[in-house]
Image 1 (cartoon, one colour):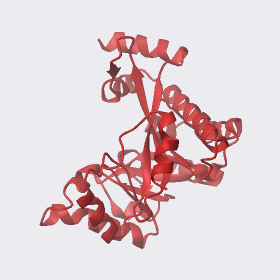
Image 2 (cartoon, one colour):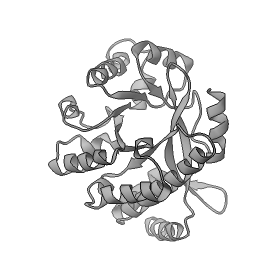
Image 3 (cartoon, rainbow, N blue to C red):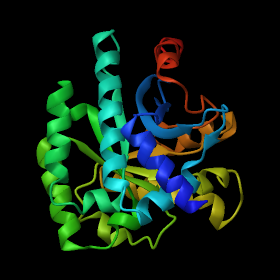
Length: 256
């Protein structure tokens, strides 16, 4: 099955059959849609989907992540250009970046070329990096992040709190945004330490002047707590799951 998926993935990349869905990121206070996160989907002829949890590890083993990541970046910026041209000119795009992409010496140039190709101002692109991929203090990673920052893009640390978190690393990382993992958001209303973790992360991030995004917000109660804590943005089923590109303009209008 793994060999079959690898072969199918090669073909799907060649034929550009993979698709992106977009999950809105919304301002906690105003409710305005300010960005979307591009999420990869792999539709099958029978209408089903192969989940990223299944095919991404295979892509990593097969050395396809750089190619897959370049495809996602290109598709996401192409869509962002369409939104900007149609009047959604303040929406930003968040794109996930794998560690193998980040460690490729040419990656900053890949990003720069893609921005130029689609005529996107770099401030509208945010690159999301897994906490496990960057929270190591590795000098090579830090240099790559600095080069990316020099382009004018913003850097987000994704799923914060799920890896070997070391808050000390945050002061050295040229990051702009911290995304709190959904497991901490789910525990917001709990008493005790679990319920206080999100509050502690938000407090630290604010001291470091980082934008804070809550992932996996599912209830109005969670949103109310996040607003009281000073969280900046949120995403999750409380507003919307990831949707097709054509649904984003209506969501943006609905959120004001």
